[in-house]
Image 1: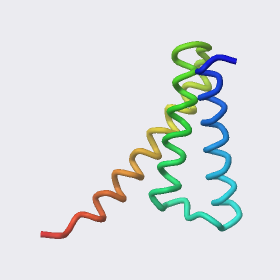
Image 2: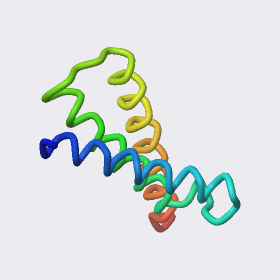
Image 3: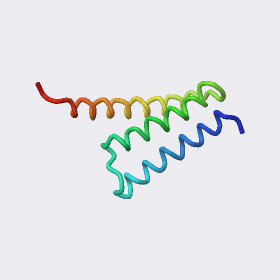
Image 4: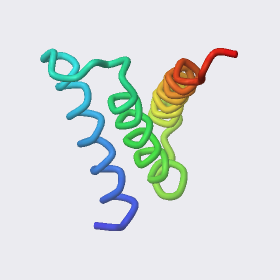
Length: 84
């Protein structure tokens, strides 16, 4: 197993744990930890897709997943900024 395979599998595990946590009511899907898990997991999967085994549909899915998670993280960061 290559390093990118291991990273991709770790990414899948991270996303599945975050999804299961949200689905079971143990993790708020809009909290930064959930968004960070989704972003990190998608990036790890993308690394394997872009460097080893390219698949257009999987790359589009993981890229979208990472982008949506990143937008959520940015929104959380902006909410924490003190109002002037």
